[in-house]
Image (cartoon, rainbow, N blue to C red; front, side, top):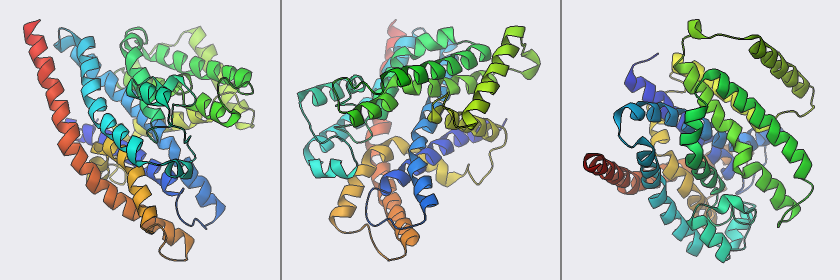
Length: 366
């Protein structure tokens, strides 16, 4: 494995690749988009960048939490404090902006709900919007992923305690993916407090759908901390592996056994593992690493930038479809990087440091 600096650079670079993919799909909502259908399919799959974020999040949390269990007196308390100071300040700033300056027509462009009511506001403030189909992705565009992340943070210490081996992480990952797929087939035609479209979106967005993705991060953690010579497979393990391979073959025959985003995420996991061994410069470089550092800010601000690009007619430049999209995407990336850099250094970094100071003080006092 590479040295420590390179190691963190490859993780940041993965976050950078994830946000660059997410920008693709949202940039596609604006302006003229006339290009071959395979480009449309490619851009629409940019939303899988969120799953890449989830895998990296779980992987890095496992790495840091494992280390801090040995270093800190109250690692669980400190874990929650770090998450709060990392996420809440910037998210609340974004919430204020999108509440007062993002109109119903702005939301309709992104195909998200336009109705903002007390339930939507209160649930988003408390990060419980992931429980409500009408709120999960309404007030803050893309806010569904934050609802899922915060739900995952809530149960992470418990998961880390009990999913304590590669064997368990693989078992829980595939079982939860299969269980979700069964649940989906049972309920997707029976909307609860939502229109059929909102209900199907909710079933994709909410935590049970994404939990198997986080567990791939657990697999990577245990894979990175376990020597192959130490791996022992029982007869039950071999039967389970054969069953998974059989189900995967059935899936490839267009009979859905596992959620499609879980299968894509397994490929991401494989790619992440390869990059951890050999961080090729095409993916791991200063550009992707820097974009990865500011990715949380960039995720929250890019919707606002797209709004103003559209408002000032800066989404279409030439008649050639792919070139037109590329120019729009490049402009979004340049402006987004500039604004996200400001929010990263002026908001994210100071609050992360403030949270660490509080933790240091509490560790000394208790």
